[in-house]
Image 1 (cartoon, rainbow, N blue to C red):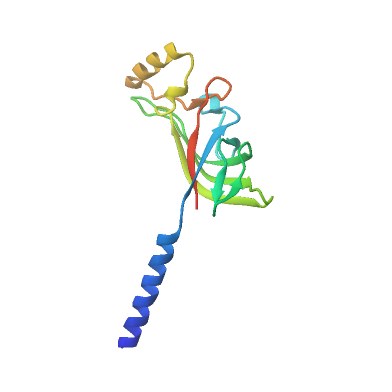
Image 2: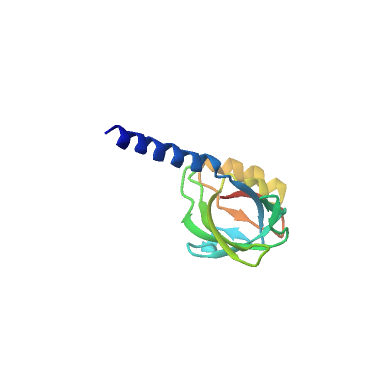
Length: 157
């Protein structure tokens, strides 16, 4: 019985150590095309291209080069509603070719909400009215990379 308990503890500790060693690598990305819930433009299953903004290093080597196109798949879309119910767009799966040319797929959550994306609405005077409209109707997710420069962080592990 003691050997069984000791074996169980060794397995438990070794499994815990493997989780502690796992490192998350940050990746800064910017959308290459508009992401919008207005007029049902963005829907579940859409592949949205993103640009990698900075070099990504793994084991002190460049893993993904700056300027590489990465694709995110829309996993969830929620339309805006009344009384400040903001729209949401969620990405969970991303695909990119690393520096060795291998297609890498990984999961990282990126949630865009109508309220959090207000800072990228242009022109700036329109933002005031969008903040005030929260009392009545929730805001749409509306990101246009041709007008503003949004940058998001995701994590590779």
